[in-house]
Image (cartoon, rainbow, N blue to C red; front, side):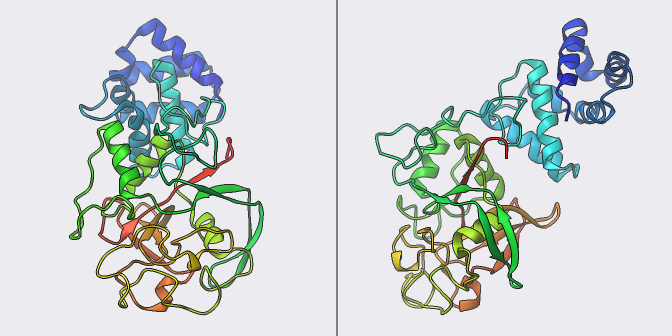
Length: 339
């Protein structure tokens, strides 16, 4: 995307004011006139977003929606309702925000539009963290996953990923509550066993977890990122090896007592990189679509299952992104700026 068109949009707004936010014909004529035939793709995206109310929502956010989450909500709407590619949706929302002088957290894919600031919405605390300047909260640790090839999926397809870092444990109830208290986001309904601070948060929708990641300056893992962190590079069936063990994860056979377990309860089940709870405890939301614009991928298997196949590193499930269940949680990744 060419960011020069953002300067043109700023000029148009400065000259004609907010009239162009509601007058689609005026907006179209002014942008096309000032661009003199250039930036056709960018202009098309800006006009589409203007016609669908993105600009007016940025200028006058919906009541009760924290400003820091507004951009993520608009991007999701453009992707899920209007089937835009995420990169295009992010550029469009941030272009309008930039032109209107609205401050939004910058996505990692928005390099050149705004500078990513991982500390902007960090959770205050006094606990040490393995990633200085990134999300800081009691119990949150990150594990580095080095760049390189790994074997992906049932067919062990060789894939390459750049380096990234992933949370050592799923996001806990305590950590998610801090996000809700800081932003005004609502806690989900408590499971039947009640909220326990050291257990993974559950009943969260994909939209809930994407909002947490946006606020924290992080991201949800792609399927590939999740699987490499769980599997390592040797194509193993389970995080700990090729044979299933009921002693190495939280499941429904006598150990989980009808609920989740505190994160890190099964250290012997860690992946080759030391990432824990990648099998069992909770299914984990990924950023990847299972069925485009319909369902999102879940990985890892939940505490209420017993079948070994469901805990394999290649195991997949899916639900509607607007749904949340008592066996579904998440963790986040951190990537290099510009990815």
